[in-house]
Image (spheres, protein in one colour):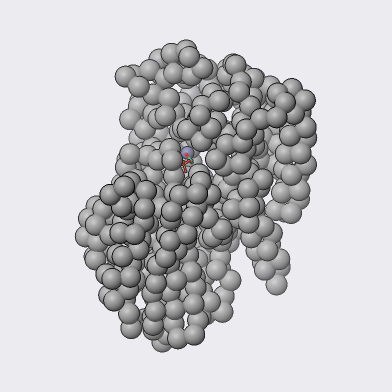
Length: 412
Ligand code: PGA
Ligand code: ZN
């Protein structure tokens, strides 16, 4: 059995230029590393990302890997699930506030990559086996960010993310279609809005004046086999019981009506965090109501349901997911490893949500790195979607390109 013989962390920069952590784990002369992304519109129940006293640095997290976790795992078998268990014990808190979810996740992912490498298996295949998901590995739909607002772009657009999903038999085909769409969109935006800024996830970020405007722009350019997905990230719009968008205030009931009109008039196939993470009755209402709406996306025949997706609502946390599946607050879930900290917990979250009939969407964070792990994760757990931003940024493009590579590996 291969033993862990080295474990080192260092600082790298994420796509916003902020410090984050990279961990390298070795067994003799085989080394694998993992780096950890960072969110900006984070849910309040996410595991704690350890930052130094200045609120930015990651030296404490690095020290925790080099001086606490490293010595504890040295000489142990490269067995990711056992290592995860030890990490949870070492930390000993509910939200990983002792060692930091960033420190813990770096070790959890690097160990998993190392084991896959030692077993000479593609990472997605190893994940499929070890996660116990009991579904075949499969390629996800590409949730590609094209317009970016919210906290990622100084609220220039009403919602945080406008995403397109293109149909296609293969990833290569849908990726190709999405790229063509992106080019068309860029030209249309240039003509109508001039030179515009970009958001943190690489989507165009023109300033828009109405809730309908982005949907009009997108749907006019879309082919018949494309749908729009949104991440409203409504927790960022909510204060004192009302939702503020473009200077107007809306009650939960009014906001629900806005969604109904949008879903009936535009090809919207998926809405993430449509309400604040504490506005639970509204999640229950929309999940029930959406089935009765005359959804334009469903008329295209490429989706069976309009997805109501939990992210801040569920934070990849098994207890939150269980609570939300029991109360039917969504029908799909975002899976972000750094919301919870270990891959063992990620696998549990996936199994729990899928057991309730929910769709799984694996996701990047707004502050990303060149690590392509989430692409392998999405394929390994047979996720419905991979949300990886706009390929205009290299840190996002490499995730899509990893899927293309996996497509070839799967043919072997
Ligand atoms: P975040 O945004 O990474 O800034 O949290 C992504 C999301 O809300 O899904
Ligand atoms: Zn989100």
